[in-house]
Length: 487
Image 1 (tube, rainbow, N blue to C red):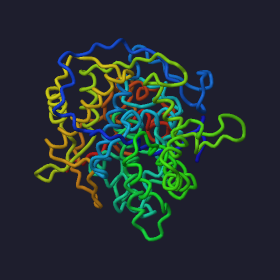
Image 2 (image 1 turned 45 degrees about the vertical axis):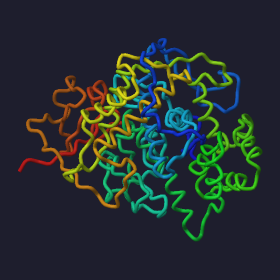
Image 3 (image 1 turned 180 degrees about the vertical axis):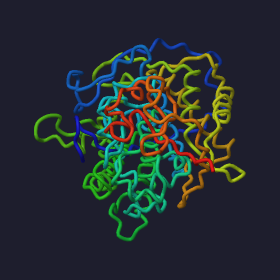
């Protein structure tokens, strides 16, 4: 574990099983009349030890009024639903508590990131703060602190043999490095794309999914480090409200060889179901909340649960929160998120998912579920939240079928990526300073091409922390633009 501002500990979250079918909502009509939710209001508190009944116990908070964070919340929930969708590929027919797995990326972001309250919806950055450079530095993992994103979790090395992020077809194209470059990533800063509000949550979702796949693979090895894992998973499959998220948080947080994972899976096998649920579904299992006895490994999964309960008006803080999801805005964010994912089409071309494909998949789900495109739903209301989940589940299913594609597909090779031709008549930085916009391309002193990602930072007078080639936070303003030179 590393400690920066408060505490950031990477985690893996797979949540509670229930008897009902998870994705069998296609023929069920949600309602013929769109709901009109109240305006987004309320405050979410985070970076504190739990449980607690006092909001003053937390170091940070986000005031939700004015929809300042709504699109960021949407992108995280879209990634969370995709995570759940992929989990069903490993365990067909599995059921779980959607509130915790679909919300897992949002909860993780609040705990792992420095200052999520600094988010600005006018940029594509999860966090535009200059302090973000520390989470994007060498050895770090970005806003979600997915440290070890360049590591193969089964091979135990830097070679991507099937269990690294870069092995996933959907994200290899835009992850920011190649398979050949992966072994050196440990010596480099985190690729800027990890701080992107549309792609960052997706990367975290695949990281969690990859951990789960890796645990299953590791349990096929003779020298099994988690002897009761498979038995535990089998038992939990038929137990409602089970703490699978807690178990896998231990696995990611403390490591596959950590004592908490072994203890939890042993308890799972040896305890009665009632005793096991009473222990691991209770916030008292998070341990002490003050003094020298705080165990941050015990705290982490319960912190994530606590933050999500705030969104759902189920926390001990007795909050009154409303998070309004406009269907039109949700569609826009859905298209933007999947616009960063790639697939191999029927002509064997590796390409990003076209916006018309993802938009059509979303619209088909609206039609099938009888949801008006003008509706607005409240994420903080249990019934309306279920409608949001059904819409996203079916939209992802539609998109996968229409491409066609498998969002859990992996490869052990670098997929060929045709680069665009470098543009002509590009200004040499800092020529034209003050006129740079998002997407403006310049040539740096190193003769490489760079694209502006935050206009006001790009236009900062050099020398500054955002100066290409010398500023320590240049990647917060610019991203390297990959292209092929004209012959």
